[in-house]
Length: 184
Image 1 (cartoon, rainbow, N blue to C red):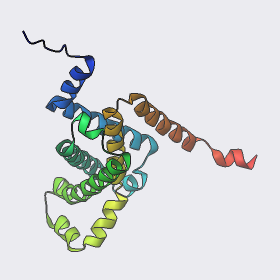
Image 2: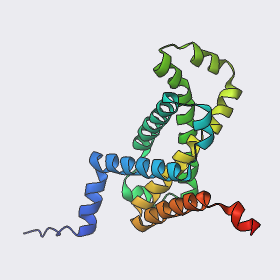
Image 3: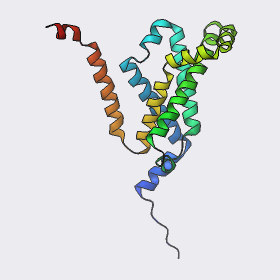
Image 4: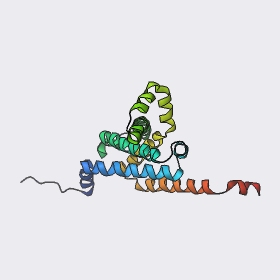
């Protein structure tokens, strides 16, 4: 009679993370962490002042959806992703975020006004579109999301907490009236 191996906790965890629900969970957590960290530090302070009202929220929504789709499409299984280095993942995240910014900038006028003419005008000058996408800082969201995926796949959940704590500390330091402390 052949003996079957009893599954260990490690194999059960690997099987759970390997499925679609595991990928969806990883992508959702990565997007939530990147959004929370970026909002705590107010990464889009410039964009929020330039693009006011609903346009900013449409931009952010489209950026996160595109980033989530790109992350989900390229997310590898836990064992495969453990071989990838942090620098490679961060560069992929930066590219995904930049691409997400380009798509979000192109889609926002359509969502607000229902017209494609601003999008067509934006695509006539790709250099300005690339500059706007760079200033849109979607690449920061992409890098933060890939960093979170990196931590999740390696089981370093406390580093995600440290990332969030560091973002909160940066926000608190920004709120301090440092000019008054320096003058005294």
